[in-house]
Length: 326
Image (tube, rainbow, N blue to C red; front, side):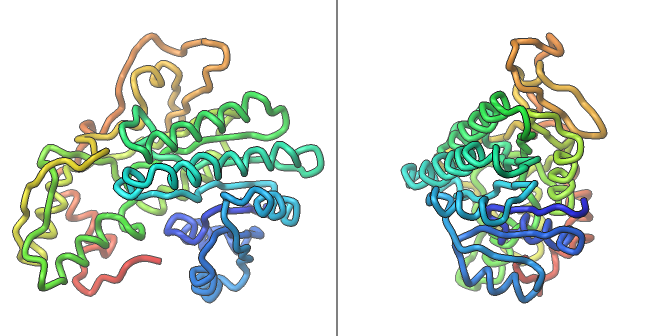
């Protein structure tokens, strides 16, 4: 990507950091987020990056930023992301993950006659597919709002991208396991169920998904990567061996699933595959692409423990001197 003006809502997380590092030299990028300390840190790394302090709950500030920057590409990543926190603070999750996204969409609609917006990319999650927890439900509703905006737009291309678990991202399981492993007061690692599986992808794959959607997604489509899965118990066994700690199996937490889906059976009837990605078309006219129903879930395409360990070693994730990513 070159010569774009990009407004990244929530750009100081691991995904935003990685995306900015790959695209800052050939594009003008603005980050819109709340934490001025993170702004200061990321500006030290990327002096060309421009930051705006703001909350997506504040519609006037969102609209101000859009009008000031006049981006042709908008990426929406701002969200409350921790399942347990969202589960027990539902109202706050709704304010950010639904109403905040609505503020961005409505501001874009109000300004689209005066600003040449081109692409809007909404960052979603496998937990939005057949959701059972507050986080997933809020993301699913926001997906619907993006689809509605796509249906009503003749000039802007709206796309949704769905992610699995991004390895080594800030606040994810790998930094947590390192922290617990190094803590002498923690005698064992707690796993909720040995049957649990999860999709996994790298930060580089995550950024490529955004870039692919911008380049190849059609209006209203949800783009889903073809990715591998792991047994969570394999990850715990690897870290148990690394730090010489036992694993205690407990029980599922509220809102937690044994496996995740990136495409459910109904959505599978609306998908076609291209270049290693699934494109789910918007069901505006009720037309199906296939009668087949397949739940594309994390119980499929599971890699072995040895392959997982090799992947983590190559990424530097098993270094005992590991430090959390940006």
